[in-house]
Image (cartoon, rainbow, N blue to C red; front, side):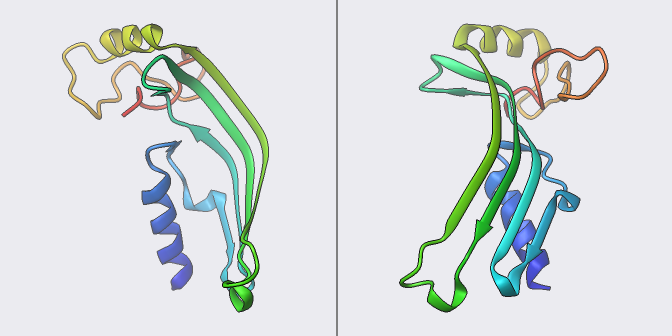
Length: 129
């Protein structure tokens, strides 16, 4: 039961950075304080005050080890393996939004594609919302 709460909390917390965090990508052994996430697709979004944008990206694996019995004295360990990011100038991101979302409001996925879609563009996710 608590594992489902953790999964929901992670989805909510990472929504601004990660596209579609499916629960099947989440492995939790809560009693042992072990959490693994694999093949996380980064959300297209501006960074560094809009000077640049993440065009697409992938994190192969994130592992968290939480020492419940010694939480006040032992560190929480986070291991990140395989980070791949394609960054572009911020003006390219703005142009993409103008083309992909012409007439669509924030949150629209019109014109966007995911990393693995055949014939898709390099703009991953949902256009940066």
